[in-house]
Image 1 (cartoon, rainbow, N blue to C red):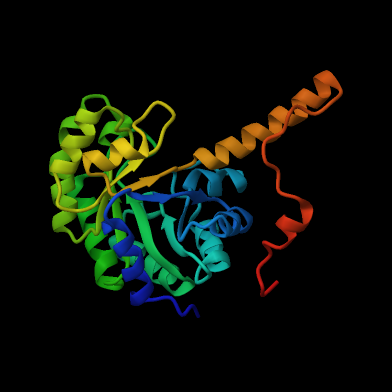
Image 2: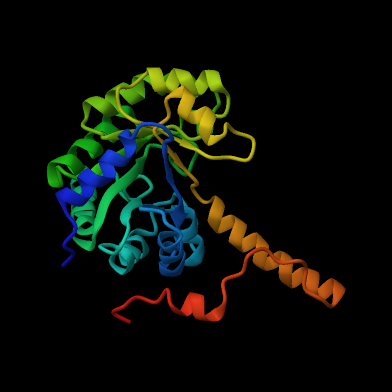
Length: 269
């Protein structure tokens, strides 16, 4: 059983309220990526549901990776970094089932979860149902940091106008933070910040605001989502293709040596 609990969750919560730059939260997909990020000095690490799903040969966002998500949390939770877990929409529409899962994640060492209202079919979970999920999780593990994500901007299609009402509903349900991926222009970011008293999480993108701009707009957390996983995957394929086509490897970015990666193994291994 993990020794992580309310004190660690409070430390994670405080990272969202530091003066200056927002919390930069990188997202891992396995033990090695989480351990490497922690070794690079990141005090908190999230998981990416896409990375977890793709590594298991499953589609993301379809509620099929409950077991894989829990297994990963048990492997990396309670270590040297604060762990928050992406649980898609909770892998269920039954708030009680989601509460049971989150209790297991907390026991595994998670200090937070990311719970989204977007569905695989491109629709949004009804706000009352998503709010009920949040309330159930907070009732089961009151100290856990619940980051309530709304995909109004991510999915688009005119749903952006629902953002403020959904953020208000999720705040009232007990969320500790809110997440609106897909915000790229300063006006939309500022509107989302102004729509809630909770710390706002934004997603870092190549064409989006810098950390400094996000900070100036009032964003308190910036995560990377699946970007690191996709970068790693792309770099691996590009290197193999380049070698096949040219007979030599390309100029490689920073590549950890064998001994460095070997040192990332869990002490319990």
